[in-house]
Image (cartoon, rainbow, N blue to C red; front, side, top):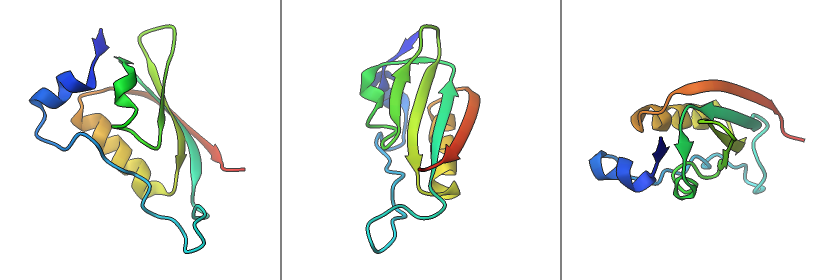
Length: 101
C-alpha cells in the first residue's frame, strides 16, 4: 500500500510539516550530540513525504518499507520524529545511528 502524505493530512488534525532542526550551535554547526540516523518504517511512502520529515530524506526500498535517513541534532529531535511517525500511523521496523563525521 502506497501512502500519500495528502491522504494522511486529510484526516489528520496536525500540521503537515514539522522541522526537527532547531538545535544549532551559535557557530551554525551541529551540536556535539548530532548523529546520522536510519529509521525504517513499514510503508511505501511517496516523494511528497520528504517535507513532512525534513531534514530526513525519504528513501524507498524494493519492498514495502521506507528509510528516513539524515542527521538530527539531538535526542529531542529524534523523539520528535518518533512522535510524527506515531501520529501518521506508521510502524517503526528499525532504527540505527552513527556518529556524524
